[in-house]
Amino acid sequence: MLKLSNAPTDRLIVVLYGMSDIPAPGRYAFLDFNAPLSNRRANAIVEALAAAAPQTVLDVGCGWAELMLRILAAAPAATGIGIDTDPEAIARARANAAERGLAGRVTLREAPAPREHEPADLVVCIGSDHAYGGQADALAFLFELVRPGGQLLFGGAFWEQPPTAEQAAAVDLKPDSLRDLAGLVDLALAAGFRPLYIQTASRDEWERFESGYLADPESWLHRHGDAPEAAAVRAGADAHRDEWLRGYRDVLGFAYLTLGRAARALRR
Image 1 (cartoon, rainbow, N blue to C red):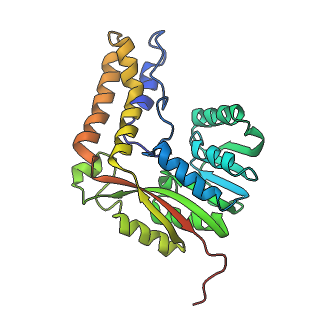
Image 2 (cartoon, rainbow, N blue to C red):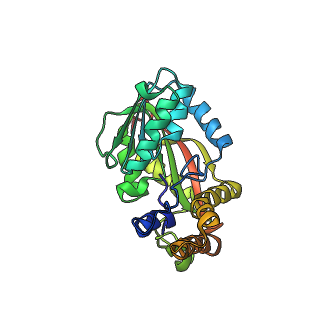
Image 3 (tube, rainbow, N blue to C red):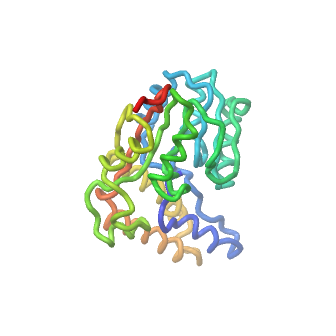
């Protein structure tokens, strides 16, 4: 799942726990994906990946595994493994898999991102490169998780334009933490992949994502704005919104790279 800085709902669940009978704000309740990804783009990606008829799918940092479940639905011969450290997200993924009749074809594990695993026909890693320490290391590890002839769907951040130190800090980064889009593709090439398709999140996708993310605390405030806990909820939401609108908006980009591993090693 995409790593967000200063996540208000995550912090506030701890703040609110035990303080009253009022439930804490939800977590990702208004989002289909924990990334700036529209249903239209997601469905097009799923259709293209399923066309390769993968038999095995591995989703690293799967969250609630929405994209993998859609891939399995579109590729009926495939089985999937989803891995994430968030127990609530894994529980949501299991519930969704059962509801869609996919529970028998998917294994969901609460565990760290694997550095060794049986290679899969299709590997998905959206916004979870931080689990490997950075994008270059992530792509190197993920290359080994893709079988020869297979594909990787890699979702990763990049700088739309050079950031100031303050703009980078809004997402807990430094200006040299990320590359531009061309530099991100270069990292994929250096890891051994070939880019099959390159696309980036639009402003509309970003705005829907950020607004959907903030909808948890905002909808809570709409119902419980006079509660004792409201000041903390309001402060967390306002801080995140300010970092987005005054910080990384139109500076931080997000790419969806469909990458191929050659069926045979290239001769040098």
